[in-house]
Length: 248
Image (cartoon, rainbow, N blue to C red; front, side, top):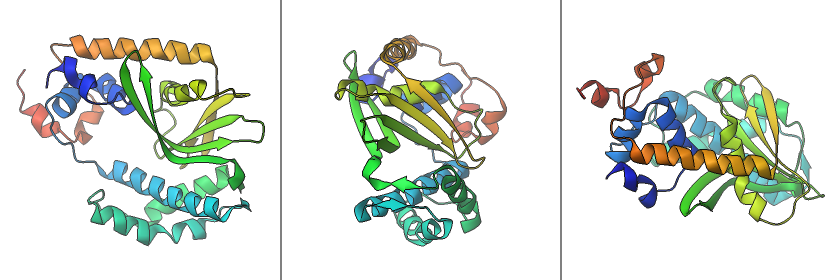
C-alpha cells in the first residue's frame, strides 16, 4: 500500500496520527507495509482496565439509578473479562489483579457517584467525515446531563504528561453536528494518579482541529522517507526488530 492510499482505505484515528508524530518509520512499518505490531504489556493492562470498567458501567446502566462505584464490585468482573480477552488473543501477558486494582480505585476516587440516567455512551464508536475522509473514535464514557450538556471521558492508564488535547477535541467533533447542546466538554481521567483534566470545547476549536488533522494527513501522504525518530521509546517498540533491520 502507498502512503497516499492509507487513509483512503482505512479510517483516520488519533492513534494513527499520534503514531506518525512519534515515529514516521514505525507508522510506515505498521500502517503502510502492513506489519502486525503485537501490543506490549502496558497496552494490554490498559485494554483490560477499559474492558472491566465498560462491563461495570454497562451493567449499572441496565439496572438504572444512582450508584456509588466500589472497587470490590468492579474487580469481581476481572476473571470473566480477562478470560474473554485471553480467548480472543487480546492478552498474552501475565497481568495480576494488583495491576488492575490501582486503576479501579482511581476510577472510584474520580467518580464516587454515577447517575446512570446521564450515561449516554459506553465505549461508543463514532464515525464521522472530515473533508471526505472517514474518522473513527472510540469514546470510553459519554455523559449527558438533564440540560443537554455533554462530557466525553477518556480513561488514561499512563502518565498525565503523555497526552494531547487534540485527541479530546477530535472525539468531540461529531457532537457539533448532532443537534444543539448547552456545552460540550471532554476529560482525560488519569486513573493511576488519580486526577482529571477537563477541557471546554467550542466550535472554533473543532474547526481548528479539522485543519490540523488535514495538515497531518497531507504530511503523511506526501512523506517519501518516513525517517526514524530515535529515542528511549525505541526500547519498547513492538516493531523494533524490523526497524533495526532496515538500513534506509
